[in-house]
Image (cartoon, rainbow, N blue to C red):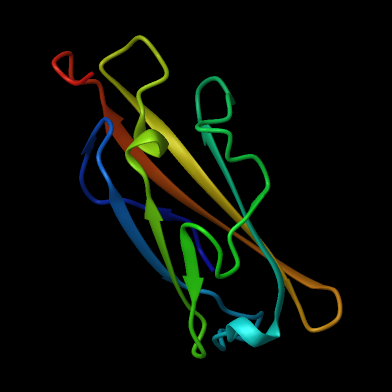
Length: 122
């Protein structure tokens, strides 16, 4: 899986639905039943600070993440996941997905989101 850059800026504290395909080294989708783990680490690119406590958080068909039988992943980021943590006008949030499957094989995927600081958002 290659890195993904969200095509538009996101106003802070906005719900974002992210979709991707979890694939093995040959590009074949990995169904949920074949995944051993799927975790999310969400951080600010500039500072490295963890956002909303999402540090190596299990999301395999729990809380915000679902994976279907074809390996399609859907993550619904909460407004707190897109909270502005810096002091500038925009910042980049990185969602690092790490997964394991088939007796120890591992994969990683990153998604980048530009979050805009909106002074009127509380």
